[in-house]
Each structure stands twice: as C-alpha cells, then as structure tokens.
Amino acid sequence: MDHDETSIAADTGRRNFLNWFLTTTAGAFLLSVTYPLSRYLIPPQVEESTAHTVTLALKPAEIKPNSGQIFRFGSQPAMLVRTAANELKAFSASCTHLACIVQFRADISHIWCACHNGHFDLNGKNIEGPPPKPLEEYAVNVRGEQIVVSKRV
Amino acid sequence: MATLGAKHGKLWLWLDERIGLSDFAKLARKKEVPLHRHTFWYYFGGMTLFLFMIQVATGILLLLYYRPSASEAFESIQFIMTEVEFGWLVRSIHSWSANLMVFAMFIHLFSALLLHAYRRPREMTWLSGAGLLALTLAFGFTGYLLPWNELAFFATRVGTEIPGVIPLIGPFLRRLLRGGDDVTGATLTRFYGIHVAILPALVAVVLGLHLYLVQKHGMSRPPSTEGQGEANRAMPFLPNFLLRDLVGWLCALGVLAALAAYFPAELGKKADPFQPAPAGIKPEWYFMAMFQTLKLLPGHILGIEGELIGVLGFGAVGVVLIAMPFLDRRAARGKTPGRLAAVFGLSLILYSIILTYLGYTMSPTK
Image (tube, rainbow over all chains, first blue to last red; front, side):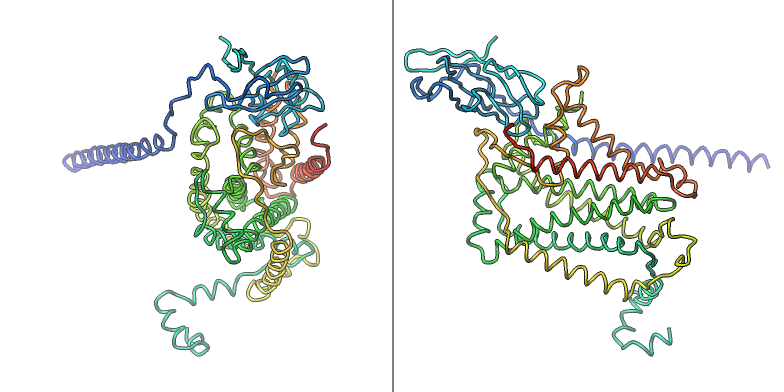
C-alpha cells in the first residue's frame, strides 16, 4: 500500500510538472508569435517634417483682400488669409474638431469647415459649431516679394 | 439507406458512401421555418447573405484591375469605369449591393431585436450577429476609401479621427488605423489589406458560427405568436422556404441591376490632401445619423469636448445593443420579454431616421 501511494504521489508530481511545463511552453510560444505580430502592425515612426518656417511660392500681391489659400506647412495643410483690412494671417488648416481641411469663405469673411459646419474668426478663434479649440496661428512675415510663415514659439 | 438507394442514382450512392450526403439530406428534410404573422421578417437574413455573396463575386472581379496606391488607385478605377468592358457595371453593382446589404442587415437586426429572437438559447446567435454588423460597417468604411477621391479622403480623415478623441489610447488607435499620423497612401494600402483579406477572413469565421447556430437552434418563434391558434404551424425549409427566398433574391438582383444601370457609381475628384473639404460633404447614408449628431453637438458640454460625448454615446448604444440578451432579464429567465428591446429599438430607429433626414435636408453652409 505504502509503495503504491508514494508512486501515485510521484505520478501526480510528475503530471503537475509536465502540465506546468507544457502551459509555460505554450505561453512562451504564443508570446513569441504575438509580440512580433503586434509590433509589425504598429506603423514605424516616420521622421516628422521639423519645418518651423516655410517660404511660400506665393507673392504677396497674388493673394487678394478677403480671401484665403491653402499651402503646405511641412507635411501639414495650412491657410494663408488676407483680411478685408489687408492684413496677412496664417493658421493651421486642420479643423480642431475632426481634422477636416478648412476653407476661407468670402461671403461671411471667416474660416469655415465644410465637414461639420465649424466656424472660426480671423484670429483663428472657434466661434460657432462643434470645434472645441481655436486653430493654431502662425507668424507671417513679408520680406520684399517673399512671404515667410513660421510657428510661434 | 435502402430506400434512399432506390430513389437515387449510382453517383449519389458513390458520393454518399464517401462524404455522407444522406446526413445532409436528413438535416435538410428536418429543417422547418415557423409560420405566423411575422414570418416575412425571416427573409432578410438570407437576403443579407445573398447580397454578401454578390459582394464577394464583384469584389474579386474588381481586384483584377484595382491598384492600391495613392498615385494609381483613382486612375485604376477611372480605367475600370471607362475602358474595361462592363467595368462600370461590376463596380456599380459592388457599390449598390453594399448599400442594399447594409439596409437588409439593418432590417434583419431590428426584426430580430423587436421580435426578441435574441432570448435564450440564442444569445450567441445574437452576439455573432452583432459581430457581423461590426464587420459589415468596417467593410463599408474601408471600402469607401479605396477610390481615393475627395469624399473618401475626408470621410476617412474624420472617421479615423473619431477613435482618436478617446482619452489615452485614442492617438495610438488613430495611428494604428491610418498606418501613420495622417491619412496618406499608407492608409490606403492598409485599408485595402483590411478590406480584401482581414475582414473576409473574420467574416468567414463569424458567419460560419452564425449560420451554424441558426441551423442548430432553428428560427426563433416570436413570443407574441406563441400560445395562439397558429402556434405550431411551420413550413419545410426545403424546398418551400428556399424557393420563396429565391424569389426575393431574384427581385433584389433586378433592383440591383436597375440601380447599377440607371445610377452608376460615381467617382468624383481625386483626393488632394492640400485642398479644403468641399461644401456639402457627406458620408454614406448609414453613417449619416452619427455624422449629423457630431455636427449638432456643441464644442463643449459641461466642460467636456462635445465630440468625446458623441463618441461615448455611440459606444454606449453599441454596448446596450450587443448586451440586449443579458439586459432583458425577463427574456433571459425564459419569461415574456420586457419592454426594453422595444423601447430601445424603436427609439434608435426613430432617432436614426430623424437625424438622417436632417443630414440630407439641413443647409450645409448655415
């Protein structure tokens, strides 16, 4: 009897060890598959355009009062506006609501997003509709025939 | 078996011995469809399945000419629409059938909800159906981008921005969906892979489970028709119900062909990431209610960003819908279902209709 019981106890011990061994191995295997898989699915970080300043291909005379135009600010769309008072201003053109690209509306003389009817005044402030924040404003400098737009620090 | 042998030819017997045809025949003979005043609604599951099969067939055909890159996608669809013989037809059918499939699926969903088909023991059937709903909407959303036109570009910019407003994990989710920080050619390639490989694989599994469960439990008899004179009337699935199904499918095919011929799918202007969103921009009709909700929510509600409230609201509606078999406690205990499903279902239908109507009629510039 004693002998049998010890052998059963030894068997259970061996079985437990094998079960433990099998599950940890299976776990390690699963991890070694899912880790590279999930890393693969996350897109690699592409170098952000670090441009803090751009010189536009546009001459100051080409933009009329009470109008706006989209330009590339690094990899992002931005908007140059000439107000009715002849002042040049620049903003990020991505709506702060859900990132549609905004446009200048001459009929109401301010910036408007067509997607969800968001309105911004000519200081970039959100004045109507769903946008929760103002548009980021950039500094505009006119040097002779060149327009230089830069991020405000 | 001997009687079967007398009825069928040698080929049947040969095949039966190897793959067990008589088991299937027995199963098919046993399958019945309950007959009552709501039997009509049973046809919409099969209708969705039929339109899905059309999607698979036309989708495979489109793959032969489509090129998934930002510089070629738009042009390859122009080529399909103008150069390839009947290319316009294949693409138009794919586009229309997608719309009809979503429509049939919504009818199927709401009829299952309002007739309490989700109650025990069909909870898993309901859950797998909810999974198919999510997969279908994902199909619609990813497929919408593939023409790489102006509408698609902004729909995707907005659509991928929506999970981006979720606190903490939002920006990560957005990057994962877009394949980068912005909607670019990388997004197009990613959506293409999702649309033609990942989603079909998932649908195969979930649809398989859904159909197996429908087969296993049979169709649900609505509690409101139980205990009446008509309680136990039924119709054999083969051939009676299937033939009626076929009539429906034939009608759907006719509607589809007419829509595709008279209103071919449009292509619009090629996407330009440096052009403003055009006035009057709209999503597909089945996202219209959500779109209009986001449009009407103010920037801030009690200090929280309006869009976050909207997104959380959509999430909550989804959770209630998915969890319906467990929320309807009376149905879960096998009693007459409570009012929750009816109240929730009817208000959801009403809300969607009103907001969709507003979405199409409100002036886009006011």
